[in-house]
Image (cartoon, rainbow, N blue to C red; front, side, top):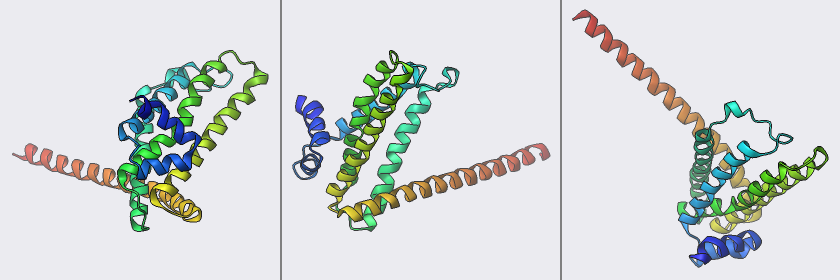
Length: 206
C-alpha cells in the first residue's frame, strides 16, 4: 500500500520515463491512486483559493464555491481523457483508456505537491517575495506538462513529434466535445419546451 500511494507516484515524477514504462508494462500504476491524486488536486485548489495570502489571491471570497472547483476540475480531467482516447484510437495509439486516466492522474502530482506549501507560505510573504510564489507555480505547471507529455508518449508508444501533434488534436477534440454537448443540451431544452408548450395547449383546450 505504501509503495502504491507514495513511492511509485514519487518515482514517476522524478523518473518519468521509467515510471510510465512501469505503469504500462509492469502493471505498477493503480487507477484508484490516480483518482485520489485528482481528488487531492481539487482539495488543494479549494484550499489555495480560500487561504492564499491576499498579495497573491485575487479571488472574491463572496464568490467562492467549492462545488464549482470540484465539478470543473473533474470535468476537465475526464474531458481530456476521453478526447485523448478518441484521438489516439484513430491514430494507432497503444494506450487503453484506463492507462490514459492513470498517466494523466499521476502527471497532476507536482501541482498537488506545490499548491499546499505555497498557499501557506503566501500568507507570510512580503510584496517583494511574491515573484517566488509565481515562479514555483509556474515550475509546477511546466513539470505537469512535461509529465503529461512523457506519459502520453510512453502509454501510446509514440515519437516525440507525434505526441505533440496528438496532444494538440486532443485540445481541439476537447473543444469539439464541449461544442457538441452544448449543442445537444440546447437542442434538448428546445424539444423539452416545445413538448411542454404542446402539453399546456392541449390541457387548456380540453
